[in-house]
Length: 266
Image (cartoon, rainbow, N blue to C red):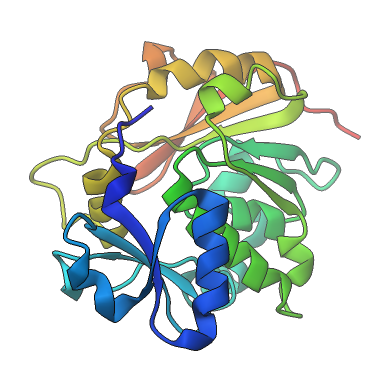
């Protein structure tokens, strides 16, 4: 588990209309509450701010304000575009989890992050359980899911997504069997690679590297009825140095597929 100093994280609001929502987030995820975001200068220990901006929770890295806020938005933006134009069941992620016309699996996304891949799978009809062990990320994800459930266009999709804020490496040993386990652990980017997305930069500065990612594969293989799918950068080694049954390569990433049992034909 990455070592996070939670004293560096606080919850605030930009408009007092969101004060109650900010208090609820602080209480639920056990962060300090400082009220108006304008007062953050009075709290020099705070490095990251979870703030409500027009009823939307966003994460601000205070020493890099130009990065802007990180939020989860399933209604618009990239998630909406991918839902409408991403290729449906012909997408590589659909092939990787074995999604066929007669098989729509229950997927455990054990490293959910901001939930983008989980939303794609849910939009294709899968029931998805999302595990996210970092409370700051889980808070953003939970906020995005709650807003999605209020949107008539995607509420049905959001209802197929259930968030569990817990450590996958321990909780997978206690969970009930699922059809497919999906893993996308954080991986260090190459020094000379293209500019890292702001989300990755912020999260890596907040939680560090995912050094225990290799420990996820064994419990995932125990839990998955049919297969485990691991998303990796093309240059990254196999998780836990275990060769997969097959891989599906894309431009920058690949899906390593570990097959436990054949997917039923009907």
